[in-house]
Image (cartoon, rainbow, N blue to C red; front, side):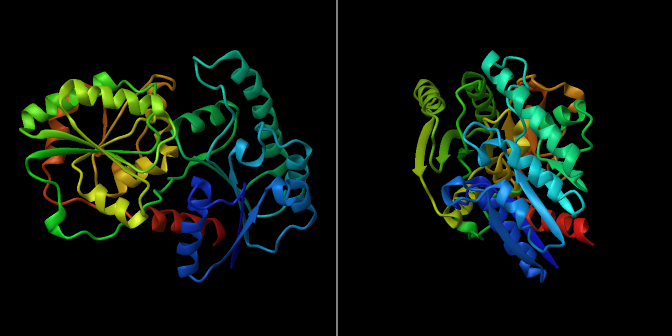
Length: 345
């Protein structure tokens, strides 16, 4: 059996979707499936239009969709519709890593205007393509799609840091609360509220707070806010810079707690947050209220690992989780691989 992954510019190591496809392909190939990657990239004259003219022979075409992966302005134009018509009678899966922009209460008018155009293009594509399965990674995207009548389901987005065993002599120090930050440090995150919670946990748990900022970072505002909180409250702080996946796995295992600055309703699209969860870390996250509470959920394997920053009554449960002697490691790639097989068989 053969799967054709269609994605934007192929740039492993610097593109989450490329890494996602690479890891998933490797997992499926272990199960004796054949996987090919088709990149929609204007720099090498590859387009939806040219793909529509020469569709690959495959048992499943898996479109890894993010509007800005295919176009700098987030609009793919007539080529996307041509591709939709070409694959209408094929076994097509659409995985939404991103949907249209501007679908949140505080969006600026320009985002809303462009988002309306993107939404129209996406819905028109789905109407013509008639995919067999439509997936989204997070609560917000699922809510927006379902509001438009799209029959979409949740598919877990695994982390891009495979587990690499670390000896017991490198496990978290008893006297430290080592807190992992992995992924974008968004400036909108309530860092002062996080400090309050860490101080509370530190006092009850009788540990000093150490902040470990893993990997590279593109948003300096959030980093500066974190440094200010560290100085104000006497937290230790370490920036590792870019690390190999093996080194990242080892450093995650040295931590007691993770923090995701991605809002709760879109946390599911963060591979960095998934990596922390898969390594058995409890994760603090903030609910910014952009998606109705009744539409929010946590992926089943992690229902007891995610703690809301703006719910003080969960602190005792968080401390008990931190004190656990043994962590449960979750193989997210294998989990999603099984789901992919179900789409073919």
